[in-house]
Length: 260
Ligand code: 15L
Image (cartoon, rainbow, N blue to C red):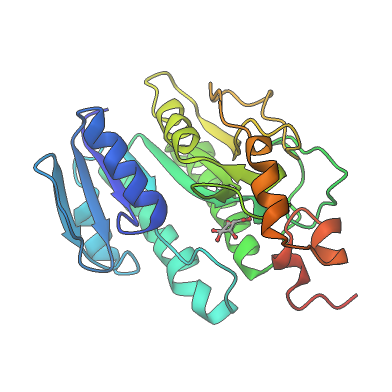
């Protein structure tokens, strides 16, 4: 793939991916709603708002793939989520179709299935079970991605990202942690030349307590890190989960406004 566009390039995942692309000598078009700093010679930076359809259309001109990491990344109100995770995402897919973009790598989230209990192992084919308006916006995104593949032949890999952190700090992360190197491996595996069509894969490291089984996904992703390595540090940190956080995979997103 020649022209690759990274949205949300100023965010935590974007920053790690930019370094990874630079280390592996690949050019990248980077975009964010805020000014981008430390732009490398291998990067082309464009600042703008993806909820502006004209901006998004121009951004994707001649692009082969988009790594879409932009959007609201925590649990917020429906009104706050709407422009970034629904309107902007639709603009992105409409523009991808118009501009002949081959594949979108979409930052979905484990919160699309966060209401499943922690004693359940999920595959990418499981029925949606969002835990929040944030998780619901990712369900919309995955459904949009599916429609654009089935109807318009825009490929998508939906990454149901777990807890993307340098190190796991909470007992929940023993299951949900996604390390920086594993995220890079996951994105590389999603950018292969062979056709992937519409795929979902959980973004999780090789944690022995993980809730998610990716063996049925066509994305050839082999994580190497394991949160268990940090067990002693996590125990020393003393974070205690509430009953609800411990019962449901989505943790505190489930606990927020839980009313049953
Ligand atoms: C996510 O999808 C969020 O973007 C991140 O802020 C964390 O909450 C993460 O999930 C998680 O589940 O730990």
